[in-house]
Length: 280
Length: 109
Image (tube, rainbow over the protein chains, first blue to last red):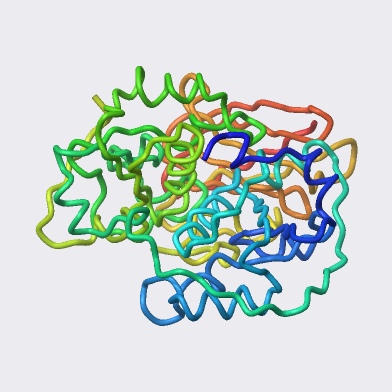
C-alpha cells in the first residue's frame, strides 16, 4: 500500500461515488450522523452493532462478516471507500477490519466527514438501495491483529505504540476527555510503550500529515525502531487503527499489528506489568 | 462512576448527534467543560469543538450538537477550547476544569 492507493480525496469521491464497483461507506459510532446527512450514495456501517459480536467481546466471525457485506450489497471485487467522523477513527478501524477479512480493495477518504463538512460539501438524506450480493470473506489475517499474550511477550522486544492522549498514557485519565472516566481497572501504560497520540498524525481538518512529517514523527521524534515489528494500542482499538493505517498503509511498515483489546483489556488484567507517568 | 444520558457506551466517539446544550449533566466527580456555539444569533450545528492542552496539544474533539452544544470530561486544569466552523472560521477560549464542577462556555464564531 501507499498513500496514493490507500487514500482518496473529496474530489475523487465526488467524481466516482456513483461508479459501478465503487461503494462508499460511512462508519461511525454515532450512526445518527449518517441519518442527518451523508455523502451521496454512501451506505452506513455501525462499528458496534454491525462489527462486534453481540455477546462475546470480539468481532463478528467470518460468516457474520459475509452476511453483513452481502446484505449491504458489497461484492468482493468492489472498491470500498470508507469515511466517518472522529477524524476517521472508526473508518480507519473498519479499513483495518476489512483488510483483516481479506478485502484488499479498500480506501479511506482523507479528512473523513469533518473535512467534508468544514468544506461545506453536499450531504444528502437519500439512502441508496443496493442489491444483495453473495460475499465471501477470508479467515482473519493474524498478521494484522495482536492479542494480549503477544502484547505481553512484546514488552522490551518490539515497538509498542500507545496512541492515547498523554493524560491517559500517564494514568491520570482512563478514557478520552470527552467521555466519562470509567472502564479499565487501572490506569497507565504497557512498559516500554512510546506515547504517540493518534492526533499527531492528523492535521486540524482531519487529513493525514505528509509522509515526511509522519516519518519524522514516529522515527526521529518518538524513536520507533523501524527495523522492528510494531504493535499499536489505545483504549478499545479504534484510535490505534488510525495509527496502524499510518504505519502500515502510508509509511509502508511491513509488520504492524493493532491490539484491539487495548487498554480496556490490558488495564484490567490481573498481574501484568504497568508503568505510570509521562513519556520519557 | 456516572454516565450522562447523552454519552455512548464504551466507544471513543462523540455522543450521538452531539450534545444538546440543554441536556442535564450529572457530574459526579468528573471535571466537565460544556457549552454552546452560536453564529450570529443561531446555534451552530455543523462544526467541531476541540480541547487543547499546553502548546496546543490535542486532547479531545466532539462534533457540535443540533443546538451547538458540546461537552468534555477533562482532567482538572486550564485548557484551550477551539471551535472549527465551515468556511475556515475558528474561535479560541481559555477554560478551566475541576472535579465535581461543570464549567459553562458560550462561543460565538
